[in-house]
Image (tube, rainbow, N blue to C red; front, side):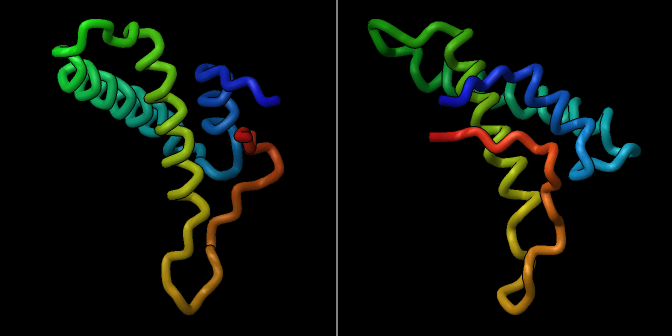
Length: 97
């Protein structure tokens, strides 16, 4: 079973070969902004419920979604005819069921 620790995963991704050294700060800032946006949208759409999820749970779920989005963007093929150009590298944490 995998354990998803958002800060650890973010640091591993930031220091991996998948993120260039020039992009590290922008990557972390983008990650944080995307997570906060997602949490905000989810809170807004769930505010009518009697028992809404706690914010820390929404934040953790948003971090997982951002992780999946990041891996997808780095590994998806850019064209139907060619192989993916970006390789994730051996130090990328592959977490999941």
